[in-house]
Length: 143
Image 1 (cartoon, rainbow, N blue to C red):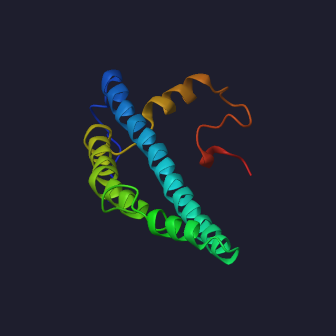
Image 2 (spheres, rainbow, N blue to C red):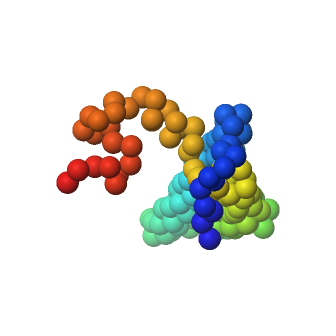
Image 3 (cartoon, rainbow, N blue to C red):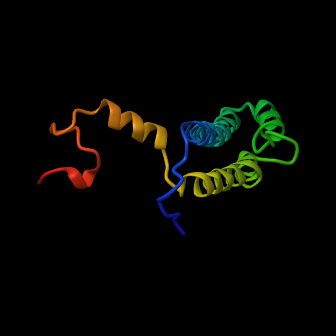
C-alpha cells in the first residue's frame, strides 16, 4: 500500500532533511548488503576453486597435501556454524528487512510515503524551466 501525498501540513525542511538522512542511511545499508553478497559469492567461488585444486593435487600424487586441505578448508564454516549464505540470511532477517521496513514507515508517516524530497527540491531549484532535458517529471517530456 502506497501512502498518499500530503495535501496540508507539508513537511518542513527539518523533517525533510531528517527523513532524507534515514533514507540515505538505508542506501548505505543497501550498498553494505551488496558487499555482503560479493563476500558470499567470492568465498563460494574460492571454496569451489580450492576443491578443484585439491583434486588436482591428489591426481598429481600429493594425496597428503590434498587430504589436509580437504579436511581443513574445503567446506569450512566462515563463522562458527555458518557458511556465507547463512551470514547473508541472518543479515537480511535481523538487520536489512527491519531497517527497510522502518525507513518506509518513517516516510509514510512524515512525507506521505514520498521519497527523495530533498533531491526533488534540489532538482526544482537547479533545472532550467522550459528547457529540453530539464523536465520536472517523465510525464512532462514531449514526444
